[in-house]
Length: 422
Image (cartoon, rainbow, N blue to C red):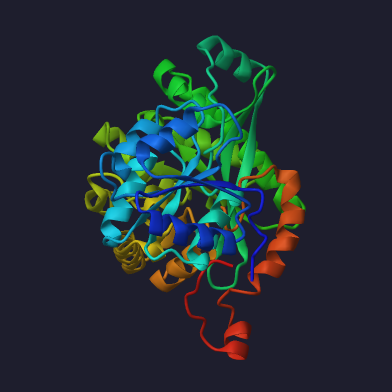
């Protein structure tokens, strides 16, 4: 029976085997794909993508092709003006598919996943559901260029605002906190995301002023939640460039007191790769923040080169496992192993363990099995304005009851096993 879920998606199927293309055509139709084109080689596919006409949304590309293999096609596709999303196909081992996915993302392409042949309708639906949900934050954002003068005006005119991404308990789905993520409501460019201006702020010395503005907005929102009866935590990102400012702990303490917020409600996230640029001052600042009651979180855990030493030196209360080891972990043995070992390490150190980048139910189940405490990602919610949170929370509560590990659900249905995407 044909599934009509993906009728609006146009797919380009690239495979040098006529037989494989025939099978793929039937499978894609069975999965509900509305428009399907075919190419017998990477070069033919690139020619089709470069011609004017109706856009291709997703390319299903076989990796093992003569003349131009899938990796070579990725390299060329990254230079196209209009770049579709990619799904990689191969009968080889999963390691090759994982390598192709990482290569595509490193070249700036949107990669929905990889499928080991034979192609099946379930596998097609699983990857295509990520197309509609936009699992890679910012994947379809336009490029915005801003100047230092623009940034100065943004700070002067209070054009910065916050969106909040929920962190929920894996045990019962309850909302335990929100990460504050800065946005810039530019008068001409519209919504500008931090990847367009954070590096500029760091390089120009404006990161302190920007962080102070973000902190004030986050604390004010946290205070509003307390007044409204929502006892929650807010996470604020601290740039490594701030970890040489010895007055930072005192300013943070004064600001929380001014806003009427308990420091224990404010989690300070420090990116792992940014620690210890100035060892003495960094340790001084982090120790004093801890002494003043601020929980410290090591962000993007697993992406730096001195993880164990940092865990030994700094009194972290939370570990956030990087999305590279969470998104698609159920299908990637290496990522799954790193996810599980990181979660085990965090538990042994009595840290709260957060998995960021959970985009599907399969990701949720993988991190649940790994033993993490909290989950953050597009499967739960995209970042949103504070005023959107009550509506989202009501919807989420109903969803969470369907797959959480709450005692009531386990008693009624028994232990839940990992599964595919809903």
